[in-house]
Image 1 (cartoon, one colour):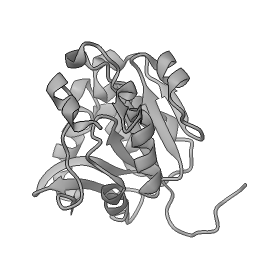
Image 2: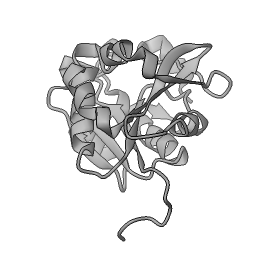
Image 3: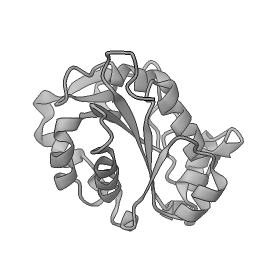
Image 4: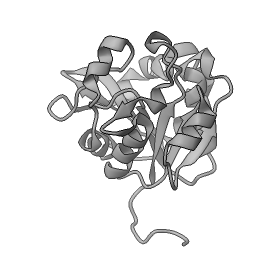
Length: 202
């Protein structure tokens, strides 16, 4: 195995898939069906197709069922026992698990945004310049996911990630450093949060 022959940066994918789907009657979002497969499989496939060779997946709600029912070969599965505290705890758990991986940056994506495909991941990953990189997809100029976070920033992002805000507080504080990458022409940033949103799934 050893190192890959390419000299490019190692960009890992970090998929936050711990949500319990409170407004979906408590169905874990990772296991919602999309194109005949659990949503978590679809989301991992998007990160891989977007160029992330290493993918860490943070599980929370029904983590055991997700492990049993979703096929996630080659992924590092990270259990977040504190998932009910919100997205911040999942981001912390995911960045902690990546810290020993040798990755230069992580592209962070959410399991419940199937309208965001490989092209958006590729574009955001391509904004990488150094290990303190910070980039974000934008939709008509408004910041969204996925978000690229350079390895040198992981510890600080983890410290500020609380509740449901995830990296929001950190990103707001470092707004001047964020490279915005317009993805509105290739992706739709809707969330699957309510029963009505299930119409987006195929």
